[in-house]
Image (tube, rainbow, N blue to C red; front, top):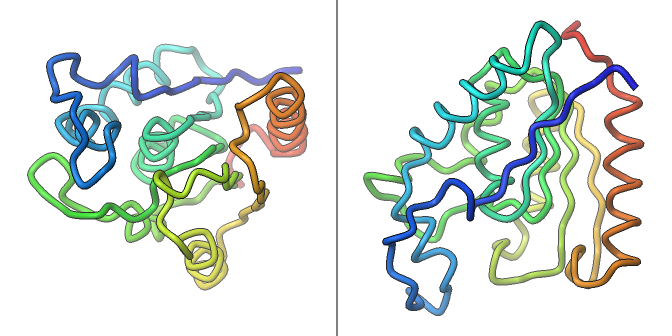
Length: 177
């Protein structure tokens, strides 16, 4: 196909010693909140650059999708971003999460696929709609896929999602315009 994909999941990057108990009713947030966005994006950029001369796309799930989006905002090493269940609005900011991901999109110059995965705990209500408005205001190409059920809960849903990501990546130019 001629393109490379860097897949991002929060489990491979987040701190194993972060508290596992729920914070504000969100167990994953307590764990990923302890891992710095800056550190994650710096590491992902290093990996993207190491993939060779052709820029990869970056696709993430959950918190990894948020880091994929932030990488797309800060790096010239990727040609497309796929976000499955990204947290676009953090419930609170702090030292490890200093900026809202949705505020960073004005720095994007690559196409984005946003997949709403049906998990209300991971995505603030209305964040996808707000993202669509913001992307349009900045002229950033975005495709939104809405799902009423979590996208990776069964093989059929996961296969449909993989096909959708493949279609998005295969229709995206591999070099920035």
